[in-house]
Image (cartoon, rainbow, N blue to C red; front, top):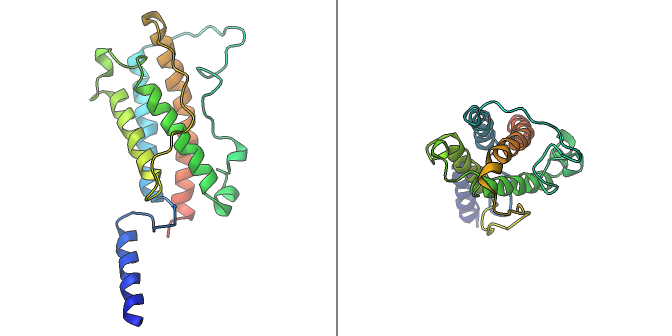
Length: 191
């Protein structure tokens, strides 16, 4: 009996050392998430210069986002220090939903077909890194859920530059908050 417990403990230690969540526990590898979210912030900002300068006239009823269904991390999502201490799952679920949403937008016709937006460019790297972070946040043994998806209508070529700008601006704000969450998690919730 003692040998079995020691073997299980050793297995759990090895599993955790590899940065994986313990089965049944869906806590992410906070430090890895922190590093990847910081990289995402840098990539999101580096994607903007390729869009060039843009003066936006504020239209009546125009929101800061591209549509009403753009995810935001809000107070009730539990991403504040107390919420993370109590239960990280609400916040992490919201971040996963946002990553999935922006991953779909970056893969849409708004961002494809432009030579400056090829896979090895900042937007392509941003798209790949979003996918990487969302996979890192996916609990072990769970299939990837299909959360809130953007309502994508085929865009016209003349709309794409403005849409890219608005999407990247919204993504920057989302990633800034997510990076703060992961920095706090890495500092206080990591084993």
